[in-house]
Image (cartoon, rainbow, N blue to C red; front, side):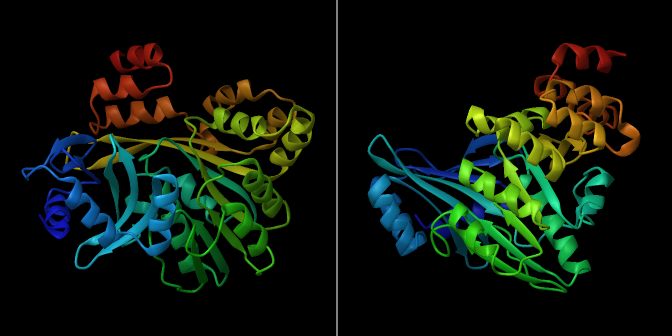
Amino acid sequence: MKLHDILKAAQDADASDIHLIAGHPPVMRVHTVVTPMDMPVLTPAVCKQFLEKMAPKEALTRFEATKDADFSYFAEGLARYRVNVHMQKSNIGFAMRVVKTKVPPLEKLNLPEVIARLTYLPRGLVLVTGDTGSGKSTTLAAMIQAMNERYAKHIITLEDPVEYTFQSNRSLIEQRELGADMPSFASALKHCLRQDPDIILVGEMRDLETTALAITAAETGHLVLSTLHTCSAAQTVERIIDMYPAGQQNQIRSMLANTLQAVISQTLFSRIDQPGMVPAVEVLLATPAVRNLIREARTFEIPNVIETSRALGMTSLDKSIAELYFNGMISREDAIASANMPDKIERLLAA
């Protein structure tokens, strides 16, 4: 069995993910549904061949040491893939995410118009959050590309691994990959502050050191974009603050209140009106009222501010989900299942 044949069949089916696990036939995810492919069961020997074909030397070394590694793979004539290789039941397994080679324009992503306005910010911290597979990377890539086409600036991206590949347009763009180009996000962020950046993309604020450096970069006049695996704006603020020891939390509340510009929390839905996916998006903008709530440890009031600030461009996740349903894009069942307050949205959809 050839790896290229598997990936070609997945591409023809418009799959977003491919799973290759010894003892199972190849499996693909198409519009959130996991489906076995009409192919033979993979053997341990075949999976080992796939690993040797796809993984760079550094990733092989990490895999041998930790039994887990992330890397990117380019299949000639097909696509680039974000790959995780791991062990399960003493056999090799792969999870492969298709990386679209062409960065989609912001206006094609069905995102709120206010997100395009965020690409005009001169400085501060913008966070895009959501579950794995919620479209965070695509949203950030589209924002970076919009700035690349508009500004003559220096943009540095720190990624794990590099997904969308940018071509410098008006801006100069440098892309660095964890493992190949940098030992850690924190190390790369510390050094890139001395490399004259205007805009910094941090793939994920996954630890305290990276988070502290990202906030410091935003404080010192850079525009910093990053992600967190949180499901709401209020939860995002609390997650950042909870990373810090109790004695430092008042200080970080003040720093975050000063630097935060916006939180975009999104989740993807399968469309029922046409093939494809569509995002529901919660948007929090750092207005003076929001900054005060962060400083005063009253983040539990953020949802109320979002609800009453729609004229400014803010929107709650449940309102966004309801709009998708009333526009005929998603099913009632999916809308209720993904809502923050299912009972409330169920009554809203029945109205």
